[in-house]
Image (cartoon, rainbow, N blue to C red; front, side):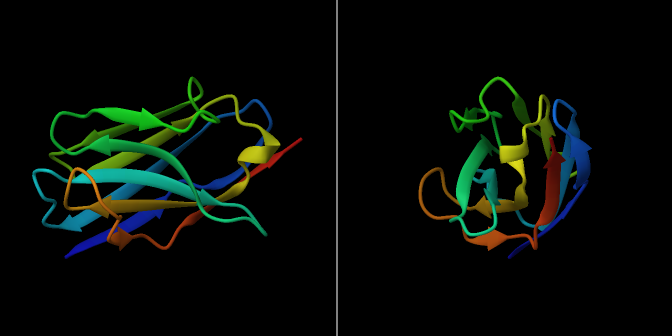
Length: 119
């Protein structure tokens, strides 16, 4: 079982930056993958970025590529999402997620943190 708690959301002007953090507790599988997803009002949840727990391989949605950076600290069991050049369309609730395998569905989810980008 893995528990995830996000922090770092807030209100920022367009062009600004925020760093989201996700604190994980419990056992993270060696083949585990951590991810960030977001859901804007009235829209479906969408993928933002993933990172493998061992190796740190990353993958990004086209909409955030070059602006967002996902990273992890395995010793602290933390996952981060550095968001730069934020746009109003990045406004959403951002959630951290984890799965135990390289592929498959994300099994564990945090409660989410609100990010609001004003124009």
